[in-house]
Length: 141
Image 1: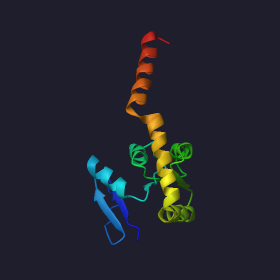
Image 2: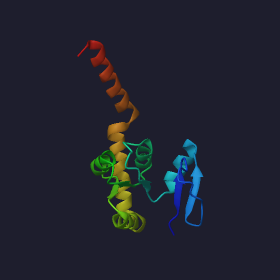
Image 3: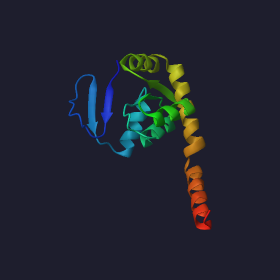
Image 4: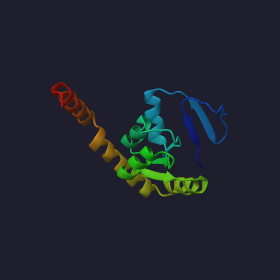
């Protein structure tokens, strides 16, 4: 009963079918709505650094499933305890089934991810970090 929803640029030229929905680019409101209904957010790009959508997923208490091919994604996922990491097709299947079939565990991942985002990436914290960098630069240190 899982549906894969792919938002963003369709670089592979995939078509929607009974299992996959290609949305193209979506508005911020649509992103929020998709994340609220999602069992998980999958971030498969090994070239990805800390992505905004990962942060948005955790802020929405949506667990994540990320590729082991990105050290940055793996690090944030491990530190946040916000989701699972896959290494290959078999571990992807296992992780996806865990997130789909164990709602209590998925909820714990989502809540952990939300706490991580609140602790490290809230607007006040980010603003404070930027101000500290600017103060240091202006002071010539």
